[in-house]
Image 1 (cartoon, protein in one colour):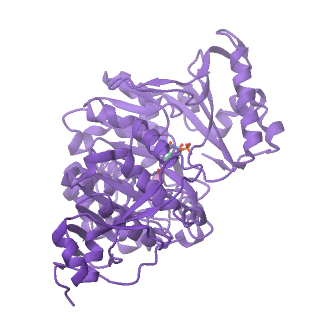
Image 2 (cartoon, protein in one colour):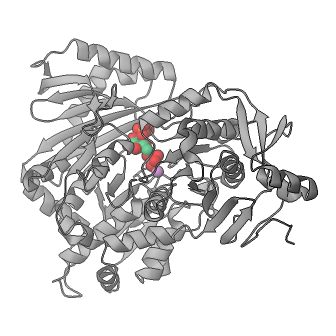
Length: 604
Ligand code: VG1
Ligand code: CO
């Protein structure tokens, strides 16, 4: 049924508004002038879509963005006005520039995402966006959002995700904003949003019905347009510009090559199925747990050796595939495995950079590379070898984006299973998978089918033999009492304050110790207190940070790195090779005594 004035060009579902916004609207303020006001009297449903309700609200404490957006328990987000307050604060922070612009929307499919979308769409319309583009069923992987914003030149996007954190009513929900070049909002914006959350008083919501997010197409609500799109299309088009899909297809078709990709019941299921199975022709069984579910099947969609255990078992089992990979809740992380072999993310980004000529997009050479501070210096060694500029940034993808925008960085990565390139402005799980596939395809180009396939471990050994090996490990102590975690950090800071250059610590001699600070070389913005670090004269490092992505308690991250150029050691287990420096780190931090934890929750 079409209502007068409602130019319905696609799907629209006039179901009841079930948002948690209280219906005690104080003012009903027409925003589109007298004509619409006239219509408001004649056709209430249409008028609702063109009017804006101003709902009173009050600031809610603690809506501070962490490393990557605002993350809280789902039931907190579902509380009265919790989500709406943050989104309204975002729009207030962005100010007049949003008028008439297009906002993108989507998320990792976790519980509450669809309901949240309805609230966000109404707020976007009520605050002056002329259009919202939303992924079908409110789905949009994080890298896909970045690709969409860039390719279609949209104003920005809201991603509903708590990434690798568990989902569901008992799990976490999250939200973040990506800006015009597809990048996670820089701190200048997130600080402003937080400021707005402390004074927000009015929610501006378009008075329109809930929309059908299942059907692809456009709907109009007065002047406001909503378009539901295929969430894979732009992303795949982007990847096709980066990789040689024909060459990858040929490689995947080899009978002596098998791969497996674990989507962990999260957002990459439909993406991996389209790209790996439909485009590259891999068998359907290549994608493991490819059907996304709102609570990730009760799992923890974090692609590491602990939470992706099923994949690990397959890759260490009999008849293991040559290549295995996994991605996280929102599709921006990746884990790369070979047959019985784990590539640390720090090594992975270094190896991709060293082999970048296997990827058409990088054929002209790399502009530069960058890594987050706790990430091992394996990438620096490649940069030195290739005579490339390289950068060390704080933890969090947003810090890479100015470098990429300024044309100073082509490939970057974080030790936390994040790898990416300047084709978009987010870390990109499937990019890493296709990058490794491209490397393997190139290394096997001259290996006849049935010959000895060059595998992931062969690529790693070749790399270490050229550059040496940066042994690396991260210990995560999750859900530590905040007090105890603060004590550990205070203890480490205390040791730092008493340790001048030259101090002997175990077998190591201190070069310097500090709390990492970064001055962005492009805009001069400063980020301080980004991690306590000990850097030794041989390049070995011990680093402590508190996580900024958790929703309750504290997570302590301890990062350990030691370099070796002794070929006899290259195949040694990292935990064994690093045992003395790990012992030193635990001693100087007094972590076991202060937290009561004798072992970490996750070892990478
Ligand atoms: C963690 C990682 C960091 C990453 C961030 C977001 O942050 O350490 O490298 O950028 O998660 O990743 P923290 O503050 O918990 O250490 V994801 O996949 O959430 O978007
Ligand atoms: Co993620």
